[in-house]
Length: 199
Image (cartoon, rainbow, N blue to C red; front, side, top):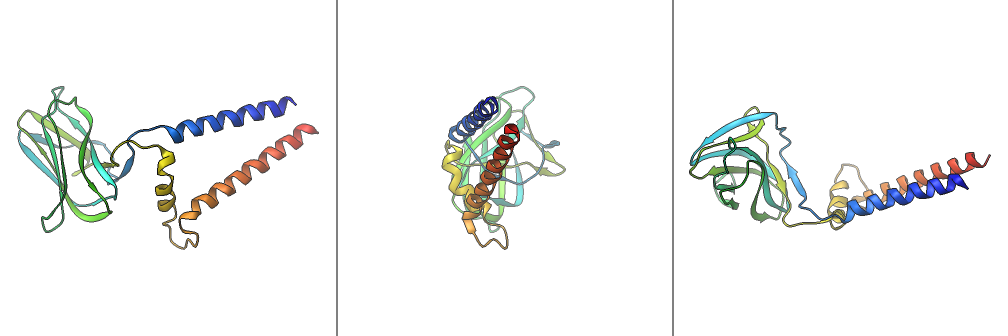
């Protein structure tokens, strides 16, 4: 009986934690360029500009997250423009001056579909020096979805992306199948524990 109580309490705790995780609202990532933030990449001085060429911007992007340093001064105005290889505008956004240095989130017009080969330009307004971070010559770009969402609301999107692997006959249902297999494994493990405890 004691083993059943402990297992029941543990399962209830895990279920509660999963529920809290799924229902928590926050701005979620859409994707990024997979560049680590190893250190400073470039320093923009006053009204200056830096462009990252041939970038892939994931669908449903509504903001760009950047790590910026301003030597403990407030940030200048930061403008982001996204254009295709022919210079045609795709999206843009602006962050007012006066933010604290560190990670900033710059809202941009929503990019509905995943698009490759785009130029992402970051321009700073008049002011001091602004450092952008990444690795080598590449600035780390992290794209965020617009607004605030729970992971529960994102499940259809996650299931769709989970099923994009090659040779997958189940499509978006692959994630549900994997969850059922995992649940069956947990159930088998619990039955084994209970059986061993009863001996």
